[in-house]
Length: 224
Image 1 (tube, rainbow, N blue to C red):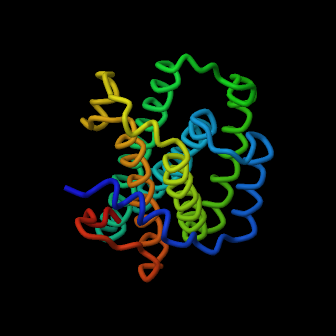
Image 2: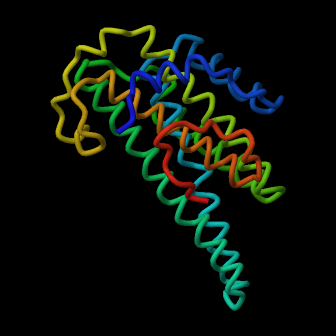
């Protein structure tokens, strides 16, 4: 069992990746839309987008298998990516549900950028971006996602540092406990941040950058 408080400190102390220009522009655009301060609503927007690349990779591999299903080695590699992508997108969707539940409990209204037309427009733009990048180079797509997940990990660690009251707020929602049976909202946020680190690590492995994986005791086995 990993110590979630220690893992949060590890996230805060570990330098961020050296983000590429496209990644820096992407994060800057998020700050322009939502403000620099991390809020539950901003985290909710991040999770709205987070599952998109995984769906694109899964679909791409399905199309690939329709052409290469007679090659056992290709099938094995594609199935591994598909399984990882499916698990990761489900996990990211859980994050979205959990954050929505917290906002509902706190009676927080969605800000303007979570209004359906704007949210869906941003999701469509990210779908197009993820699809084009995957078509150009899956390795580049995996690496961009690693940067996205690294950013998300640090965002959650900093959010909890700046909102210590979450450490004493009990979790009572059955839905949230289905995601992770943890006693406080502080631990739930830490668990989400650690999920993002695992997604980052798997994305780095997928693009062949194993040397950048943030290893830690009890780290789950590679999914890719």
